[in-house]
Each structure stands twice: as C-alpha cells, then as structure tokens.
Image 1 (cartoon, rainbow, N blue to C red):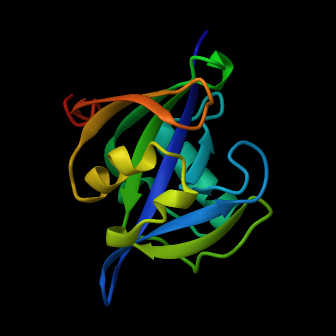
Image 2: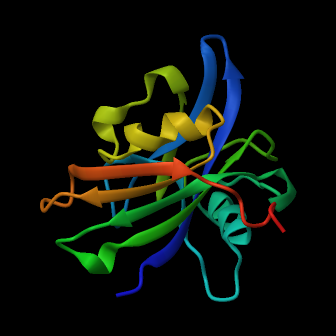
Image 3: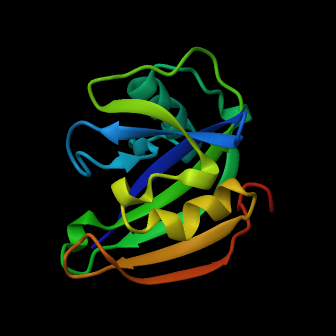
Length: 167
C-alpha cells in the first residue's frame, strides 16, 4: 500500500521565554482533539511546498510564500495495524508570513514555547522529532506506531539532505 504524501508547516516566532511554535487543536477528522502541526495532503499536481502554503491558508488563515519555507526533513509514519493510514510527510518551518493566525473549521491555533511543547496532548511521536527539527537538525524519521495506533513502537532517525538543495 502506498503512503499518503502529506506536509506539515510549523510557524516560529521569538517569545519572552524563548522560541515559540504555532500548533493547533484539531477540530475534525484524523487526530481530532490532538494538538498538531498545520498541514495536510499534497494534492495531485502540487509540490510539497505548494501544499504547505495552501494548507496554512486553509487552516490558520495566513499567507506563507514558498520562498520563506525552511525544509526541515521528513517523517514517515507507519501504522502496522492500519496501513491505509501510513503517511510520508515533508516538514517545513517558517519565520515569515502575512496575517495573524486565526481559527478555522479544522484547527484552533495557539502558540507554545518550544521548550514546553504540550506533548501529553500531541501524537506520541512528536516529542521524538519536532524539537530536533525546530532546533535546526535536518533529519529523516521513520515512526512505527504500536498496534493501538497511538503509542510509538519504534523511531529511527538519520541525517536528511533536502533533495532540492543537492541538485
């Protein structure tokens, strides 16, 4: 079975207590009730960066330009008990956008200090890779979820080189 190609984009800004990241409480669909990154499926004919920009607009009502995206790495999510949920994720960061993040039908956004991510409300895998990517590590991560589709069975991380930059 082929994994769905998805994208995540994490907005970053300085705060009085260090760097903050924009996350959102998912209001509908897959992951409802969890605190997640902004993102979604890459549509046919779209690049991952185009999808990230579109998803940011749809979910939090701000404009991000592809030139302002910082490629951070990839995360492959494997759900052995539900392989139709497998996802190949391209992750971006950005410190540049237009507008003020606001709630949509899908996401209720909020800023969190990077040093105090709400991991107890996030997917269990996030703490294994998100802080590293935000801190500047460029990594490729493979996450195998447990049979309950919630807990992490295994995480494998390796250095990642952006294929767009190596050409």
